[in-house]
Length: 290
Length: 282
Image (cartoon, rainbow over all chains, first blue to last red; front, top):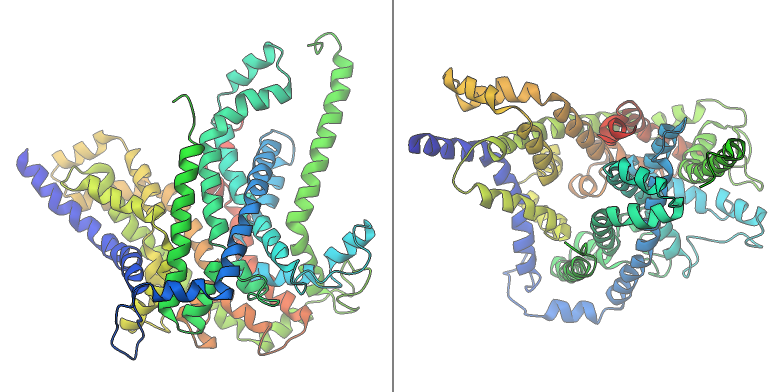
């Protein structure tokens, strides 16, 4: 028996080796090495020196990063909308109505669309003479065409909306899965006891969804803090840096201006925020009575 | 409740309820799908002002002219081939390496199993935002810049794929493995001849999800590849907006060419995207 276990150990590690090597190289190494480089003046042409907190001092004195950080925090405003929206969608499509699969597909289609295409499409939508302005004007919500992406007080919200548009379907599927694992006899028993739809939703569905709500909220908080792709394809940080997010700053510095240590310091800060907020969520949204 | 005593009213109420239900569903569906529709209208129309007020919600003088224009303006055919190439290799290597890793985690007892599993789970939690920046250094030092290997390699092994396949392996009955071991089959034979064929549906799930992910990936390939001819479609389509300065209609057409494969893949394999959900609906 010992011999068998021993043989399995060797074989198991052989099976695992290629995957572990790649994970080490492209997941563990970058996190570790990146955290170290954030405290250096790394560049390809010079000897690397430790510079302590210099990079952090630089970015916190840099208006682009600071306002980027604020914008990243602004993205958090989206989280309740995404979660409430996704739960609503999931409840709406968790039915055996004719054509319901078609609706589920429609809600999920934005999720499987390339972000670059999303950028182009919403560029059309947000155009001064685009469909959105037409609809808004027809409904008398605005009087004159609005430059959604060219107005520096609106552009961030426009980008946030696109992020929401793209993310909703993903969370819907998560909630749909959770809804369908709720045993239906609970709902039926409550119905026999005379509970209204609304009561059943609050007393049964929501508590049963609690673990999923926690997971999805954390995921969407993290996603909000890490927003940058939509910025890249819609506005590239403009107009007047109004849509810079902290991570977009990191990409901009690291890959366009090749200031890698600064970029790493910026993403280090974002990572710290992510960890802190994830811990807070875990603490306060943990399912009770368990 | 009074349901049973007043069936007619209930039925009317139900119809009313469902009408409201469908109305809400339709409004949201329009918001989700409308940008696609408008892009389509823009792409197949050949007449009229694109940004006219009121906008045209129905194609005028429809034709495929703009699509032909896309093929003239950018090497979209080679973008397409590059995307296919990247997707095929990513899927192949991911299925191979992740199922190899998942098998011992699911079915073998060995020293360090908990540790390895913990490490793999950790990659889900680790703040991976730093990855692109340092991975670019790594790829540079491995002289893999401007190669598809550089695009593919960091995406081949993911914790999610390993977890899904591990779960699949765990569902296979132990008797099958015991019988094979008694017959003297090696672990490799058990893995490749018995286990892999049994988890084909899960391999398909992971494969399709990976293919779509890889097709849609935008940031990393745009970092690694610098020669326009070698861009995948997701990166190349933005070229229409830039250097070539093509018209909006051509951009719209190029956009559609980019997403049609994913949309088709999604529509025909919906059950893999929303796995387990339809089965559970009563």
